[in-house]
Image (cartoon, rainbow, N blue to C red; front, side, top):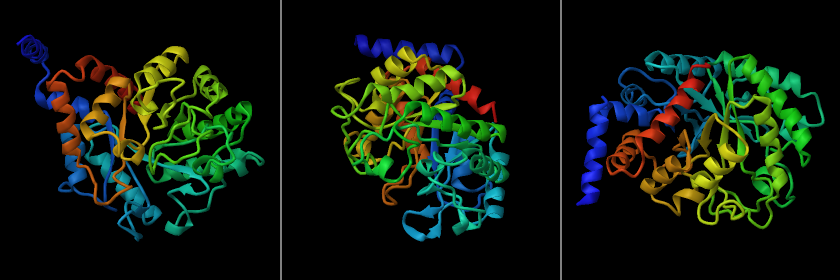
Length: 361
């Protein structure tokens, strides 16, 4: 009885202060970036409906459709992409974060395969060359087609030669924290100069891992080193960080129970508390198997929001048979709110940070 009364009081207070269901849904919607299928949109397209109804923070775009790698998912040419992003912004009531993964090397969605100017070097290769000209060109190209949020650069240290997902793919600038910070600053400087926000990743460090969080559970406890935090601390102190992306790695030196992306101790304790970061925190794709094979959708959203996560990323890219609709995401989050399992105060704090970021566009 006491529980029912307390929840009823909570809901009554939210209504008294003017938060209707629709308003709460929009606050929750502002905490999600989602992937969708389509190379163009119009007023009747589902993603447009979702953007307008739920005030989504943004969308993430991919070149290849996971169900048919020969087919474009969102990107087929520069002209098409520029039109798509313009349409998305036109239908949004607020500035929309249009995200992409454009690091260079194996991780670049814009390439000569879909009509763009060049292949960009890997972080490892850039580290021995002039990074400035590459990143200036990349930033200009992203900006020219309406992409305003690049989920890069990688600041993981190349500490484990057996690491395939970061070190093996040459996504790290190296093992020296100072060198990593130097090249990261070049990346961020040029992106910001052309109106593109960035996300340093993968906090609290993925370069010492053995596994791939796309495929399953990854525990870095035995290999992780404190110096993996150094690039984050230096970049936070510099004031250059737009957002921080948190990995799905399990690090029992920080939290013995939850992976980083669902961990209050990692996000609010370490990142916000110890390192002093006050900006937007975004998850890695919450459909990666390190999360989706171990946590239900309800628990994933509950733990992520309660950990201090601001933006929850659902790419709908890894498994074409397990696409999660925006409505299901918001309905799940709203039920958690109704039941008192996530708080309005936490939702509003996240919205304040996200709106500050969106207003930079």
